[in-house]
Length: 97
Image (cartoon, rainbow, N blue to C red; front, side, top):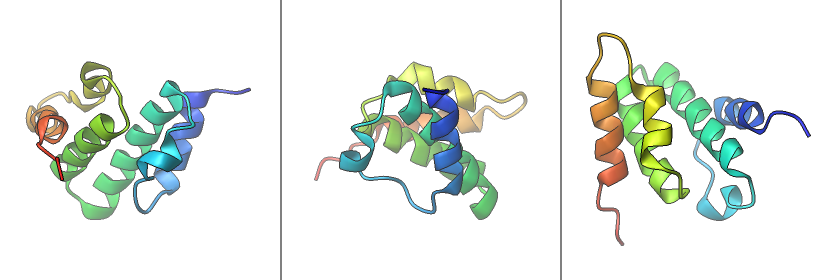
């Protein structure tokens, strides 16, 4: 079986764009959580903007049906209170179409 969280992180690190809700839905909670963490890290490295990556992670967390606080813990950084604020802003954004 393996570590679902780890597989999600690795998939997220290799992803150039986020998976659609339909594509991510079959995966377990831990895989989706790992995917968001890996994708956000990749986005922060390629764009050079940790706040944008945290905001995007918030959007994806809500879209993928993940608990806000369980993902937010990954964005609490020593000396950088903004990453967590951007994550919450993304999670709480009104994205109704």
